Length: 79
Image (cartoon, rainbow, N blue to C red; front, top):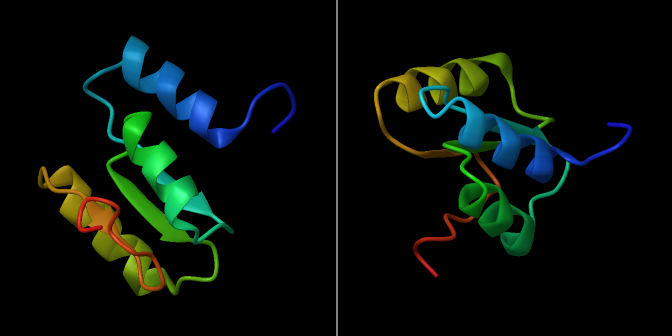
């Protein structure tokens, strides 16, 4: 994204619209990036190579009030 990255965009969205739930769709599976995303307000973290069913599951879980971490992503809260 020109001008800012997804982490910064998530922070701004969550500050301005706290009722909105953000699911990061990313290429980066690293623990550091996932931790930064969750710290910025993301409610989910899914890799771009995920299948459609996983993305649908992420949306259902997040809209249900929980946090979702896709396959290949380590929950930063467990480390």
